[in-house]
Length: 278
Image 1 (cartoon, rainbow, N blue to C red):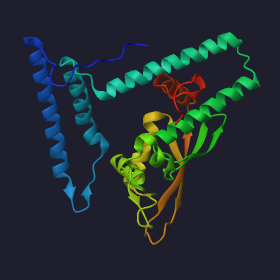
Image 2 (tube, rainbow, N blue to C red):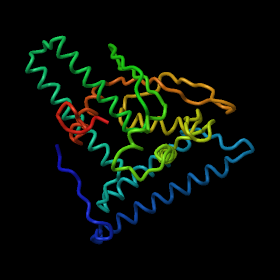
Image 3 (tube, helix red, strand yellow):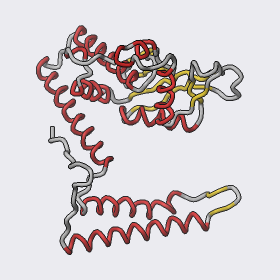
Image 4 (tube, rainbow, N blue to C red):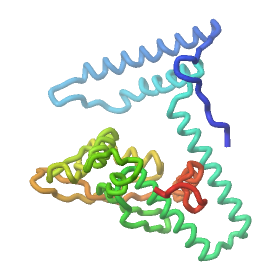
C-alpha cells in the first residue's frame, strides 16, 4: 500500500511557487471565477415564481470547467483535496482486497470448500454488524447473500444505552444523558429526530434530510450500495412517518471485503484477536 499522507501541524505549512506556477494558479482562479459568474447569470435569468427550471446541458459546461480548473489549482498549490485522499485510500484498499482474493484462488486452485465459504460469509456478516453499530444504530435484522448482490436489512432503532451509562469510564453521565448525546451526534450527521414520550426514545423522521444522511453513510462505506426498500411507521401523534428500517443492496461483495480489511487495520477485528467488535 502507498504510504499514508502526512500533514504538518496547523499554521506551519507553506506554499512556495515560482513565477510560472504563480501565474498558472492565478489563471485557474480567473477561469473558476468566470465559470461561477456564468452559473450565477444562468440561475438569475431563469428565476421564476416556481423556482428555476434549467436543462443540465446548460449548466454542465461551466460545472466541468469549474471541476477541471479547481483540480488544476489544487495541483499547482500542492494541496491534496479530501475527496482525492479518500478515493486514493479506498482504491488502495480495493487493490489489496483483490490481491488477497487472487492469492486465495491460487492457493485453493479455484476449489474453495463449503466450510470456507460459510466461514467467509459469517465473518462478512459480523463485519456488517460492527459497521452498523459504529454508525450509531441498534442492529441488523438480516443479511442475505445472493447471486448478484448482498441484501442487508438495517434497523434505525436507537441502540441500547445501558452499557454506556453504566460504564466506569462514563460514570459521570447522568441517567438519560447517553441518549441525549446519541441524539446530538445523529443530528450532526443530518438526521431529523422526533420523540413522543418526553425524550426517552428518539425516532428518525422520514424526510429528505434523513434520507440524505442515510445515503451518505451507505455510499461512504459501500460505493455499490443503494437503498432498495424503506420501512416506515407512525409514532404517537406525530403527523408524519418515521423510518423504522431500510433494506440496502450491495452489488459488489468486494465492498464488504474492503470494509473487513479496514476494520482489521483499525483494530476492530475480534477474529484477529483485537478490538471489541463494536
